[in-house]
Amino acid sequence: MEIQTPLLAEDQYDVQACLNGDTHSFGPLVRRYQDRLLRLAHYLLGGWDDAEDAVQETFIKAYKRLDTYDTKRPFSSWLFRILVNTCKDRMKSAYWRKKTSLDTLTRMSKQETDTLHTLGNREILIRSFADLTPKRRQAILLCDIEGYTTRETAQIMHCSESTVRVTLMHARRVIRKRYLEYTEE
Amino acid sequence: MHCKKIKNELIEHGHIEGIITEPDILEHLESCVQCQAMIERLNTLPKALQSLSEENIPVERRLRMWPRVAESIEAQKRKWYHPYSVWTIAVPSLATAAILLMLFNSVPATRLSCPDSTGIVIENARIDGENARLSVSQAKDPQTTMIWLD
Image (cartoon, rainbow over all chains, first blue to last red; front, side):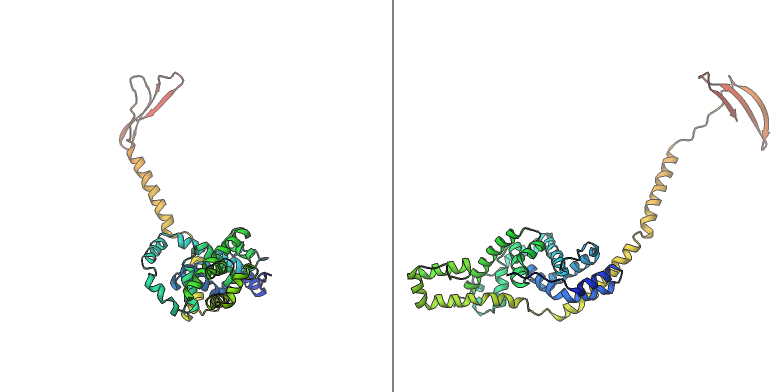
């Protein structure tokens, strides 16, 4: 059974204080969620520098649009939605296309794949994420790592619940395949 | 052969309970070390995925996040409160003034002279040491009367 993300009283309190003009109340919100956002952005974008920029942009956008936040919903889901959109925009940018085309050139060669047996589970999974499309990556990160329900993931990804289920099914299949290949003795 | 089928089912469903029911494959599974190892490896996947959510964030990135966000918010606030700089007002105003000046200068000044042949001089006077004359004449339009001072 899936568990919905609860509404946090301290989130609501800080948001209200920000809306009343107290900028410093945004600090606790940033500190509360920065780790989760940084981690997700890191796995989505593949690098810490890009992740840090994306998360900063997310917090600034969130502050600017705080009056549009629906207080009946979890603040974290709203924040994750902004982050996912920010990462999507970054991946569409000319800078990103240039960067990923370079990455493709330097992609793992067959020889490198052979040395994967020496890697830990974390590295194996990160390499497996690289084989997923951005949408599948988002779905698996939000559901299997962040622990969001399919309904919440659908809201964050701005799509239907059934789309999330299908996307997850494909993503998990790829991850299982890669995980078995990379951990094979 | 059975190994491949078991691997495919594992990749597809993540488990084989209730999926593989054929007795010969189940029998193979009990004796095949490779297949058992494969199932064991795959059983560690959910925990491995979960462990990613506990990954530590580099400390310096955590420490500088709020100061940077706060700085950006403050900078943007200044921009929101003073959206127009001196230049955003001065430049369009100067440009408009320059265009108007050019337009007025481009229209040649025309000096009309009194058609004195048809006019009637009402008054002759000296203004500032020069001769001046006030005259009335009839324009081509019979309803218009022109009064001249030259």
